[in-house]
Image (cartoon, rainbow, N blue to C red; front, side):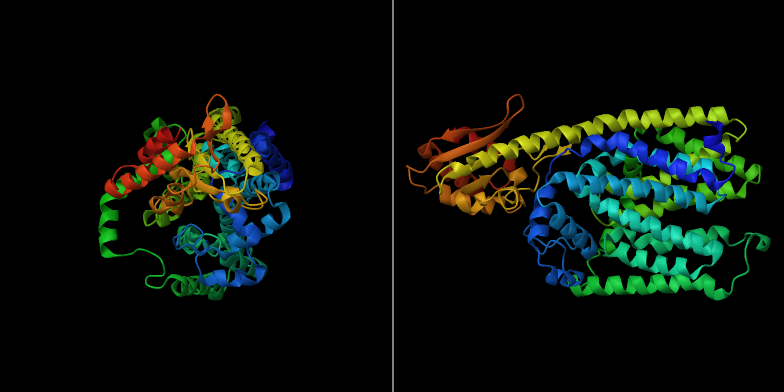
Length: 531
């Protein structure tokens, strides 16, 4: 164990990477047998039918092309391309997508190991500890266990890869590294918009090294100092030009004075919210902050400048810069994926300062305790997503059984949007009724009305045309209700056409007369009346 933590040289790095990969597989292997959830249905339908010749147009269009009825102002053509390739390979087989998610998480763990190993002090202990904590961090359960989480996995791989190339370029001056940096940075910004903070992290890294002794550096011409920034500037110009063409105005970024004023007023609240996402035990927030401050003080007194740079870079600078894009946009815990990489590196750096290398047994004990704490929080979270996937598969099987019913039948889907904080059918209808999930498509075969939480956009649900059509159906029309029962799973029952028609008419009247009433209450009254 002592050898694993000290690593006198880099020849044991492959063993460390293998161990990290096995940890990820052991923790997330059970997700491979999962099923599609929520956005996954829409993404597979879109990816399996999207003509490749139209793909270059997505550099100047919203990624969804109105699939949800509104423009999302998201320019992610390379993320769409990755989805199209997977859809062509796996179609409606969820296993392939989940293997890709698992592989991406392993790659990100390895990249964080390399970034920490190459950045400050070249400590193998810090690199292994940071990567290990990142591998098991409980906030990643949703990102890895939900196929849609690839929207964070893939850009993080490109982001960390670009940062690693920049750090290596600063150390060895290789032109190959700077070419890789430009390529990965270009791919990253066109995969997800939060990666535009890469040049800020590059500048922060350079600023922390600005006053290093010249004897510690290989003399380089000024071109080597400025070249990465010229390339990244061209990447950002290309990206924001495409955004302006796609969305006009402020290139799809809200920067109005009013929003900045509101942001300033809520800044502390937002940062506390982000911190609570990252810490798997919220009570650890203030003790963790005190430990980081103590480590910084110890590093200053002991003149451990590399350790202080590491704490500063992976601590406040990484946190503020990587969360900056979310201050202007929507944010969910799974979007903290790249932010968590800095937190894990910060924990490793702090531990390295407070516990000297000669106390290797104490280090090993602390790493073990932290890892076990993360795993204890991660396992239940992953289990929720795995169990929700089982429910999704069973419910979808129940729906497909209705394909034998007479054409023109009415199909009412009372599907829950989420179960225990795990997305189930949010935004998935009517996509789960189309090919490749249902052949022939049930949206063509039947008259379908979905529950608002599962509809592709519940903002438009009150204008759902099926409500008016059901209110006028013939009394001989067969009608079926598919519901989720917590104890019995998915089941369907036949409805009386007269009661269903009257219930639809009353639903339309209530939606017009009481539009402020929550849609879930309208829906429950409709279902109770139709039964």
